[in-house]
Length: 115
Image (cartoon, rainbow, N blue to C red; front, side, top):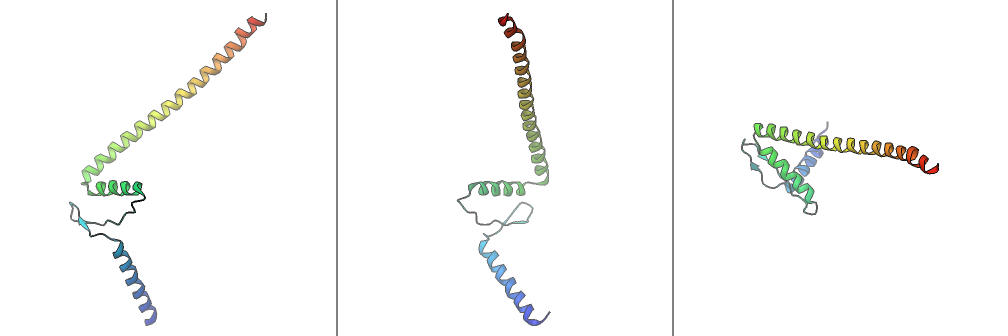
């Protein structure tokens, strides 16, 4: 590389660093001594704010806590999945019962009334 390209890259790198520094809020050390970088959050999008709060909370947990949260989330997720599948199975059973009752009505009740 020639010196002109090096200067261009260095200048662009410095511009990017200053741009990143503008967006950062001072770092806060978590319990493990690692800095947590937080960025300014646009208040017009509260779901991103809640998501980032949950992510920060999860990142501050010790590894045992993260495992426990993962296990609880998996149990709750499977319970919800099980409930949805039971609901679908119930709806299918109800549809089958409806078809059977319709056929019974059609063959037995309407055939007796036409005689």
